[in-house]
Image 1 (cartoon, rainbow, N blue to C red):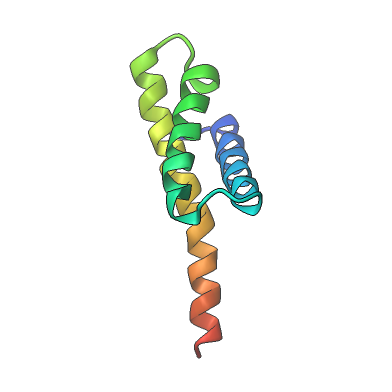
Image 2 (cartoon, rainbow, N blue to C red; image 1 turned 180 degrees about the horizontal axis):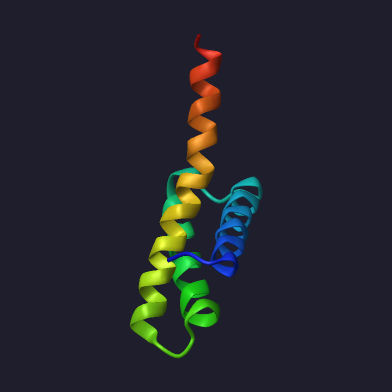
Length: 82
């Protein structure tokens, strides 16, 4: 279950990926960066006492941050095409 702290971490991961893309990080690797940052956040912050649980939570956070970024972007593009 994703708690409030995890939701904040998802927003942080999304923001860091967005910032990385603005400074020149290739957009096609953004999901991979989100996954790496999510796993790092999961292991270091969310579940520091259990490596495997931290990795699993981090994967969920990374994937959620990619969806958080691409979901509104896809809706915006769909509205423009109407």
